[in-house]
Length: 300
Image 1 (tube, rainbow, N blue to C red):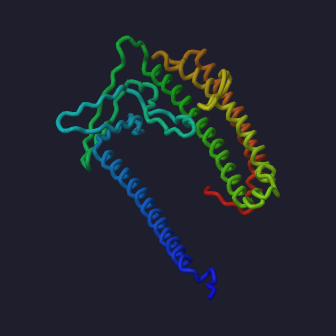
Image 2 (image 1 turned 135 degrees about the horizontal axis):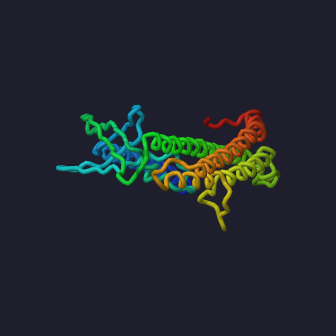
Image 3 (image 1 turned 30 degrees about the vertical axis):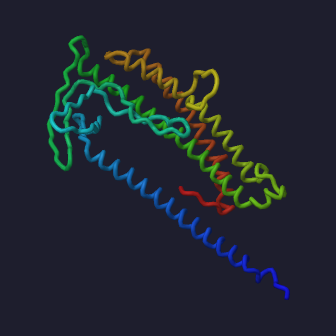
């Protein structure tokens, strides 16, 4: 008597082993997902507890503007927190790819004056004020301090705008990479069969050209952490840095030379900004239109 292959006893055993292996893999995947979620929840909870255990100190100038925020861990007993009369940092350029932003940056020293101070801890709040006196070695008048402060604020706003432009350039480049990734996945079978080449897909090819233009713009803005080789001067961020260092190198009000450097930094940013606006209005706008027509959606 003959027995068909599908009726062999080992066939059922093999299917059963496969089924059990699949169930085990699914169970392990669910366990890994749960462990990942638990780990994230635990980290978030620990971060929340750590933040709740910190004293928050908010310092405002005479106009009520927040100029410095300090967060320090509180310990049982006496706590001493030092404010070095510095302000919160202006907007900082993005870190190197894969690195977390630094929270150690601080801004230039604030001028003499009366500052309101609010201390907050675990739902409790106390308010007061401090009077910062000028250094006895300084001969500045109130007008001199005001002129110096106006110059610092002017350069700070310029830095904020420049960093926003850099972030916009980098964000657009990431969007282009995301589009290329989706197109590659959508054409994976044709690429595997060598029917098409990913790099030759029209939208991917167009995206690479846009990325080249973005890279040229970014080099005019600053020398990124990924820059290789000898770093050249002449970018906007370097011009801005020179002007900032001249203004903050002393307590004196800005001299005509300092003001000239500030004007040069302003003009440098103006030229760069005009190029960014033109490039986004032309090359980037055309690329985005093609992406919309291809019905590829990205998070705004």
